[in-house]
Length: 223
Image 1: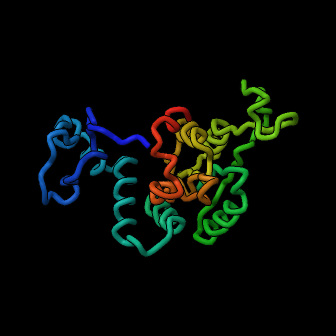
Image 2: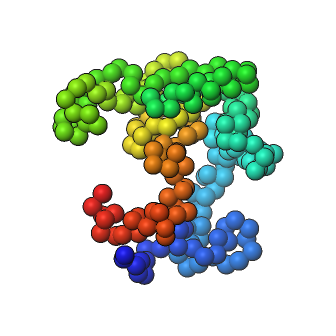
């Protein structure tokens, strides 16, 4: 098992002070806050304080955190956030494997007075070989296996003029493509992790027991 040596270009993950949170310690020499262009910092502050979408989203997120910290689930937080930004049409970009969870979530949104619009990952249904994947890399080679289509998911929800889009279990990379092409702001309800029951933090919490393979540098570099 390889050990991590000195980090040549430390960033926030190597900080032991976290002074930016409470201003009760000192900033390290490599601090991103200290190094940031003051004009850029001021530009972001103005965006958050303004009346445009960035400001609306920032204040709604802070209010939901302040009112409900540790008291309600993420599902409820999304509802509260949607209410505060005036979102009514809620797009759901869902994985085929989490369609039952999506049905429950859609029901909750309707109970909250919101209008869910769901688009499944297999929309536009084309075989994986049509996007250049080798037949041998299918989960079940030899038959039709639909490729996910996150770009089409995003574009269909764009056409629906959704106010907020929610990712429910899209694969790694597919979520990136969906967010890249979504016109509405995007948040996540479920992050897919088939191995941990969609709780990827489990792998971090068990790093030196069940997940110790993740600190094998040689193995990780070969993934």
